[in-house]
Image (cartoon, rainbow, N blue to C red; front, side):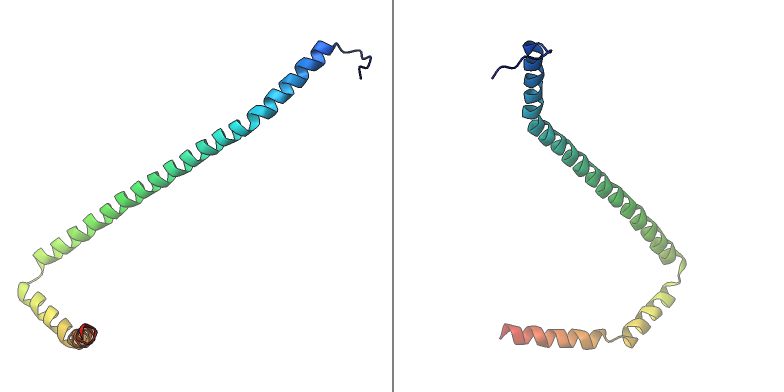
Length: 108
């Protein structure tokens, strides 16, 4: 099966071995790249979670500040009157009674 060619057999053998080496290493390199991409994606996801948590803390602090300011500036009697009006106009007592009856029926 030997053919006469103008290329030295050692050169063709070296090229063939290099090609086989590249083909043999390709799966390992692909898995390595996959692992790097997964680690990068997980890192970005964790950074996004931390940024979202920091933003929510900022919003919570602003809400706490606004509520504290309102508590300090509103007349206590007016606040009590407003809360009583809110409770009187809502169906909270009816909802609590209905919920209590459902719970008592479930306990039976």
